[in-house]
Length: 84
Image (cartoon, rainbow, N blue to C red; front, side, top):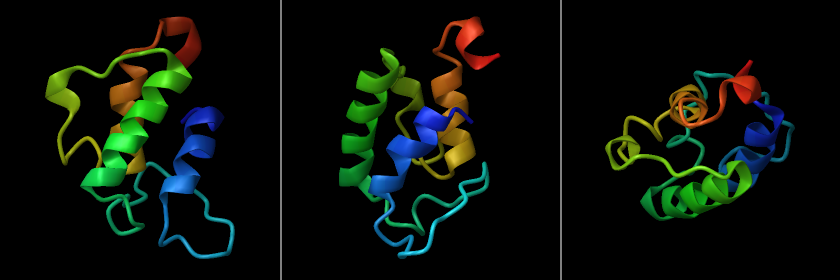
């Protein structure tokens, strides 16, 4: 996962606590506070940060379930040299 992705994700994890959280692909975003309203804000932040637009079929609960599933959706929209 790209460091820009983990940095932009942290402010949306309202239940992560005060201790630094190591984000892994299995990090459960719902458990850490990403609800449907935050997912919309997160989507806008992702699209602005990476200059992409996630396809409509990726805008679902499964995509926003874990950090890994969300990163996979993002990475699929990035040029190859960015994800390498």
